[in-house]
Amino acid sequence: MARFRGSITKVSRRLGVALSPKAEKYLEKRPYAPGEHGQSRRGKVSEYALQLREKQKMKYLYGVLEKQFRNYYKKAVSQRGVTGDNLVRLLERRFDNVVFRAGFSPSRAGARQLVTHGHLLINGKKVNIPSYLLKPGDAIEFRQKSQNLDAVTDSLNKAPESRIPSWIQVDKAHKKAVFLTVPEREEVQEPFNEQLVVELYSK
Image: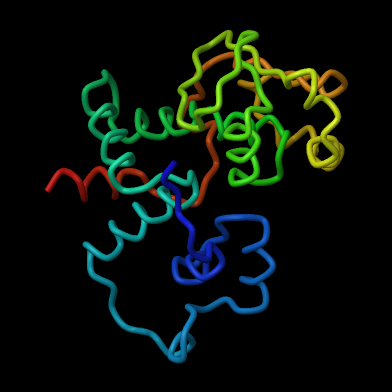
């Protein structure tokens, strides 16, 4: 299964935004681009560069490669409503993202691993596809053999209630979650501007 295998911390420094919990610490120490000239890079940024940067933020944040991201965009265009909002909603419906949002993992990369290793069920059936799009009412739970994973327990204990969005119902005691509804754009607080991505693909 294709995924980004490079350094997410270097990408975070280049884009100027933390794309993982680990990257947050690195950005605090080195809030500039990587490389020999990282601290001295200045100058006017073109409109295209700004649009491309926003697309890169979205791709790396959700762990999606270019071809798949473009397919999400095409699907967002074909749906009713604002294309940018549709794009964000599609990405938020990904199985690995919902597992992350529910607090079962401190990062999307960790959530993706839980999914691909077959630890989770959707409506009682094993699903190991991170890109699977959840529908309102879908229930997520761990397989019997995966109920006592220390990493999941630790993540749930550390995840504040305020981090879990209102569109996901989480039962921490039984390690279950229900995807209640597709979130509205204003309910998703992430450091990107999807409208610039729409402008980039619209050219």
